[in-house]
Amino acid sequence: MSANLMTPSLNPAEYNMQDSIGYLLARAKSALTHEVEQEVSALDITHVQAVCLMMLGTGRASTVTDLGREMGTDMGSVTRLLGRMEKRGLIERQRSTSDRRVVELSLTEQGRAMMVHLPAIFIRVVERRLRGFSPDEITCLRTMLTRVIDNNSG
Image 1 (cartoon, one colour):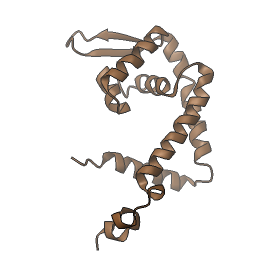
Image 2 (cartoon, helix red, strand yellow; image 1 turned 120 degrees about the vertical axis):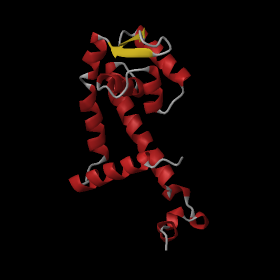
Image 3 (tube, helix red, strand yellow; image 1 turned 60 degrees about the horizontal axis):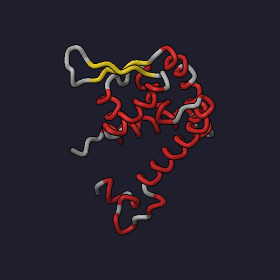
Image 4 (cartoon, one colour; image 1 turned 120 degrees about the horizontal axis):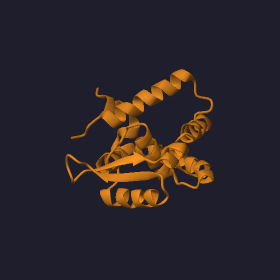
């Protein structure tokens, strides 16, 4: 018997939205986002700006295209976000010298100074949300979420 037939939550006839993986993942993400938003408001930035600073500061992204892909959003939204961050003096945009179509991004001194505070905020929020989880459960959750992300439906 396949795993799908053995798992009632994946059987369309027994579907219950409140128990669905997608719904639960969305609720968990929403809860984390809301708490991070509250915490980073003390720095006068938004959750999305904090994520952007972390991605740029850690090298996870270095171009507008990278950010759009990593954040799962369209280029227009990323461009508007970067415009606000540039006006605040948090990031700099520069056309690539090797490919003028590419916009390279970097943190300013002010952006780097702000980014220093973000790991502690993200960790505090996750620790609150994972209270009561064992280290093994956290490792398992991380592994499973990574697998969900890595499973390419295409």
